[in-house]
Amino acid sequence: MRSSNPVFSRRGFSRDNGAYAGFGTQQPQAQAGTATNPYATNPYATDPATGMPQAPVRGNAMTIDDVVSRTAMTLGTVVLTAALSWIALPVDPANINKSYGIAVVAALIAFVFAMIQSFKAKPVPALILAYAAFEGVFLGVISSAVSTYVGPGTVVQAVMGTMCVFAGVLIAYKMRWIRVNRRFVGFVMAAAMGFMLLMVVNMLFSIFAGGDGLGFRSGGLGILFGVIGILLGAAFLAMDFKMVEDGVAYGAPREESWLAAFGLTMTLVWIYMEMLRLISILKGD
Image: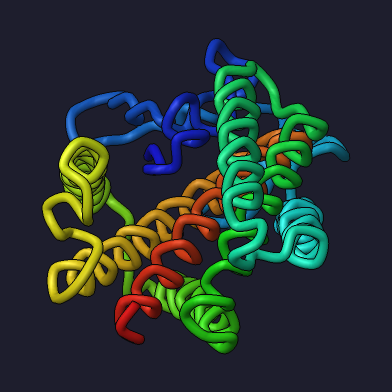
């Protein structure tokens, strides 16, 4: 099962050929109607049905605690650099162009680090934390601008909204109200591609025609697409939770918890930005 997250969707957690099977591959059929476990050769693997080891378990298999701690470090870096950039780069009419320029540069650098990590064979903690640091600078400046020109409570509302989405999806996933299967993944991926295409078209129209382009980011359409963006982020979270659950169940190596943290951070940033945009529109700016 592949996640919609660009990190997870490229290779899942692991490698094929017997060391650690990739989670994006479909389980082979031993015979008609009978699925075999493609991870049985993994020395870290457990049987998901019983939770018992299928082979002697080594001490460096990934656990939920590993994912939580790495995610806390990555998100903590985002929050810290966002707070520092908010303080050091206040957005006001006197220096707004400078602040926005720094935000754009930080976003581009964060994107480069994200792409480099996405094509690495293994997680590189330094790259992931560097991505988080520059992403935090971008978010800090944008959040400061929204707080200044929309309202000081907007950022707090967006943060609370993001936390509520995370908690809600986690509860729904653990209760199995959300079932991440092939049909779910296909629908979400199709919706995400359509959403991104429309946003790119809208951006191009805004660049060459001015204003808000086709109006997908303001008024009634802006509210609709803001809600769709948040729902897509929630779906991404559910798919990321599935990848983490499979990684723990099948004994992915501990270093892969950095990849899980990276993917979850990217998804949470997506949700926060969509939440911030939606609240800004609802407040009439």
